[in-house]
Image (tube, rainbow, N blue to C red; front, side, top):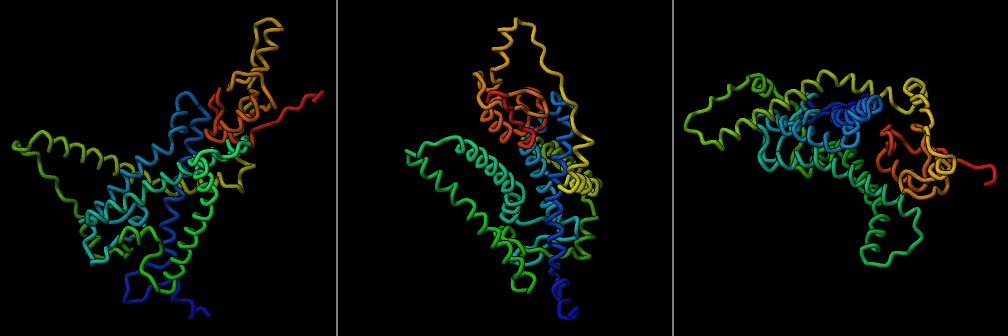
Length: 350
């Protein structure tokens, strides 16, 4: 039985095709980095919302910019993404092999950069927009009137089936890759027009040789000098990011494990925030009583009172549900919050 299944985990001697476990491992590397960084930013935002809250609110954009710089650097210098280079792999075009230190051809480079960094960002933003729209539709009983509303409802209903079709395509591609029927394990590689291969001894030798940067010639125009300075700065940022990730990748994977669902009870007991004191009202009893019943979000008398456990403030259920679902924080204190922190308040006469 072991001899029959040996070909599924190792490549043929005459091939440079990586095994399914190697390509899946490099796929999971960057997938694990983002949640771990998100948890680290969440801890910073919890400790100091005024200073680090912007990192939590703009995390997707900041991560996308850093990811673009990182992947662009590795695609230009090693013909591979960060995770592919980490596992000793490179991207090869269908037209033939090419030295890794020369980088990919222009069309393959930009296709790969879009599919590696920009497409995941757009998918994340689309998921958040659709989730927010679903929450808003839960409180609406109006039937769609315009053509755009009907088109939106149709897209909302078809989106899960589109995701299911994509997941099925990925599974079939990986299954065909296991049995050697295709050269790529992912549709994204097929769309980029590349395949994965091992780094050769010549590739490693070429990557180890650092070319000396030519000095700025006096005859160069200001535009050329500025472009070179920007390129050098971007390359320095990318090198710093790659070095930090290479050193901290195991720590980031530990963070992902620590904040996994199996350890949520331990994390909550260690990182739970203290109960904040109730607001101090210095007005008269009548004014204070009226003020307490006002929702801080809609500025109207509260309906279906709901408290947010992370801050202690009370809102309308609809207002705080939609806000927390979209922003994952308290609207007044900025504390990171989730739907599990919503507590319905029931009065004795209600």
